[in-house]
Image 1 (cartoon, helix red, strand yellow):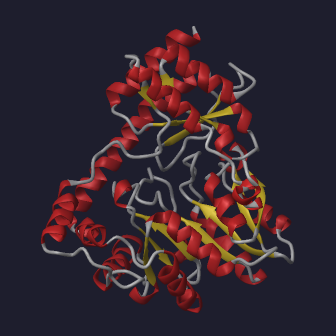
Image 2: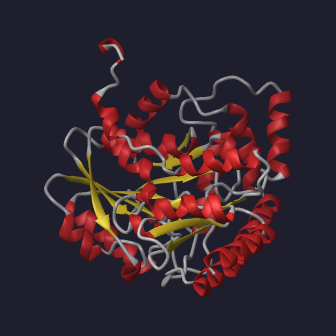
Length: 388
């Protein structure tokens, strides 16, 4: 490689997704004629709900193919604010709602608006790997909060308090969390919010799996801290992954900074997707999405006891998202090697824990129940035969 094409030094700290090797091998096996049960993909298997699709098609036919304002369609910002009022009982001014290019765009803008060189951001380990990279690309320093089953895979206020330093600028929490499906208890979230307010530290809440919660006592971070920076998405509960649309709720103090970032980084969110998303909040569409949530819960309730019966270590029942983070130490010392053998020998694809951090990574796999009940039953049968 010539020196003029040498990658920037920052790229050395950007880790690849190990699951991509699993997916590549799975695709190659399928191309060769093997039947693979896919439980590695963190994406709903349902197609986008028909009312949303129809609204998107209508927007294209009506010529809604030009830029919107950088912060998004005013009507969509108002609809999102109204959703917080009706579903969460929280009042959010529409001006504080920023429509974004996916939740990834929202996370980047939140961190770039808040974080400067050397600022520390506390994140859970295990956790979504891109968050660490977003912190680093903003010039910040990610600081691990190792979590495990003893705290429901979520940090506590006491743990955060013990980890804060004068350089801590923000704490990024995810509830429900990827890869564990863990939800922060409402009372613990309130304690964390109070602590961070007292210590002058920002709270960033990743709530992209909100809506996919199964009976847990939780709430939006905005119910505990009106100045929380909240990230959400149309990808998971709303089933619009390929439309690349999310949103960010920011306090007024950050709104102008986020607007400038949106103008410079993205110009505007995708226009047809925004018009389609307006229909997502209609009662008929929400009823359909809630029915899909109930189907995810039924899948969890089928897969979880089966994995436990087979010998996977899952002491805590995941209360949200569509993941089960399963300990596999009984079967192998390395979850990455185990995931490849599971794929090659049993035809079941799962994500190795290495994609989610360092703490417990070698001893865990993530199973995504983003496939039909019939395919889950097939995966269980294959696991039972292979492990026997």
